Amino acid sequence: MARYLLQRLAGLIFVLFAISVITFTLMHAVPGGPWDATARNPLPEETRRALAHKFGVDRPLYEQYARYLWSALHLDFGVPFESPGETVTTLIARTWPVTAVLGGTTLLVSILIGVPLGILAALRQNSWVDYVITFVASLGFAVPNFALAIVFITVISDSYHLLPTSGWGTPQQLIMPMAAYALFPMAQIARYTRASVLEALRADYVRTARAKGLPARIIVWKHVLRNALLPMITVIGPLVPDLITGSIFIEGIFSIPGLGSFFSASALTRDYPMIMAITLLYTVLIAVTYLVTDLLYVVVDPRVRLGPIA
Image (cartoon, rainbow, N blue to C red; front, side, top):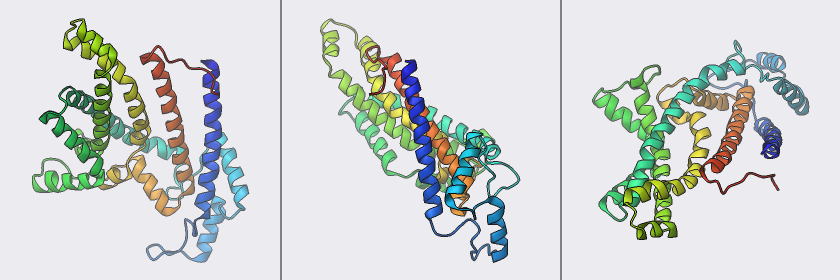
């Protein structure tokens, strides 16, 4: 186990280095810069040169990366160009809790609704219940969350004035963003749960349990769900970093001051320190999530053993 964890940690360090090099290179390969004159915000050439010199983006690319890497190793990710009054670390610490609350609540609701719907659809296969749940799940895959968000605002807020249109800080302001954000993960969880339960229901051990005369409730809870849980870990695990790092569309539409909206603004304004920090944060979350998923395999299925990576 210890050797396995050390190998995964070494792999994470290599991936972070590779991602940082690729992201840094691609950002600077795009024509233009963060202070190029635009029709909206024109800057004199002297001002742009002064800003570039202040933040060090007028240096050679290899020197910029070496300076960034050295600072990042000391957990110093620089100062955001659009908010020079605070550091990247403090900005992420201020905005990420908002995104984490939205994403965590969305994930919890998706699991609490998606898993029972998938189980119900599998147990009522080819019935009207199965067809309705499958249809709703298909809508979840087909309808973008930003389109659903606009519908919610138009109908619930503008027409009936039941919930606030935007903002953050009250439970009422969480309902519509969470509902729009949860449709896709809920649909994905429901469909994979249905497929996993159906596969477990057709297994030999289930037929043997039925032949022994065990009640259907015992078969489902003791045999089917336990064996159907392992594939669900694979599905739910990758959803975690996607949800807790924020949706730029949902946060933008509902004016939520989270990390997703800041990331979209950083991409538009070429805020290099913010882009690099959020990209590396997302990479770490993905790596940690997959590591936790592997460890959960061992807990759920005693047949799985973690060994050295070949």
